Length: 361
Image (cartoon, rainbow, N blue to C red; front, side):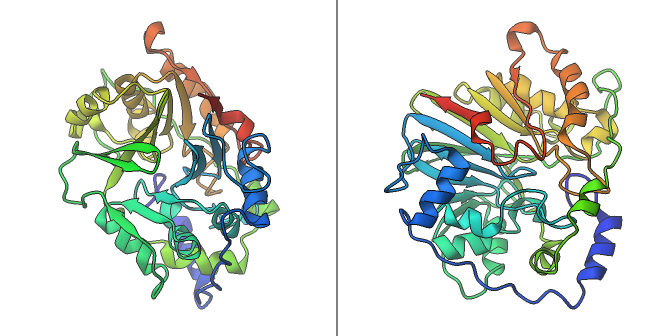
């Protein structure tokens, strides 16, 4: 289902949501440059990056604003993009200080889906329907997102499908941004050679957010129907503008055992300045954080930002800070010349904190 198997908890949440899954009202459409768009972009990207009259974002800045799990709002090359599209709300409402309407108010030009599970794509359809944003993903991702809003129209771009060979790359241009998508793997509990494995790691679950931020009926209505959306294949993306390359993936699979050819494809990509990679997943139960490290080794980024590591599913997950010690130990296994700068984000204080990931070109 998700990167940390939530089946026993999902059963209880689905039962609570039974009979409460009527479609929520559609999101309000907001025009680019409207006061609501300007306000949303200012909140997500910073007042010094957003023109307070037109809402345009600066072309000499790259800004990423974390929305929880693996969803990020991005200003790059003057374009506004969403990487994944889900505001965590299955077991707690308001833990992330954003709403689906807030993401629509950003007026993103495109939404990029890493894979189709609910914790990555559950809100993509309503946002695309309200904004006309183009949805990029596999053919299966696009079909799943369309099914979220029957009758709505928005453009989609299929980057292969679930049968596309693992390791295949596809290059595109999206406005001012050069894009490469690479088929890779979802996290998995794959048997690992003890000689290459890292210490197993599973954080102690933290239930506090459920008590402080119980799920609302409207959030259950929106999320419960998406619980069993299919994976539909997994994509890694690299986004490039002159002077900067961002690589992002919302799951980290066991490439060494299953698809070592992907590592060669990643090593052949243009140099990565900032790498956002998922570190939470099934793998940590079998080989710790070794698999995320293999992506880092192949990409050789200057800065590494862990993702998919926050308390997005209280009861099974824990706060991002619990990942700092094992992740630091994992990076210490790299030789110093290959060791990236670690830029950890902690929940909930680093949600919608653009100053944490702002880069000048």
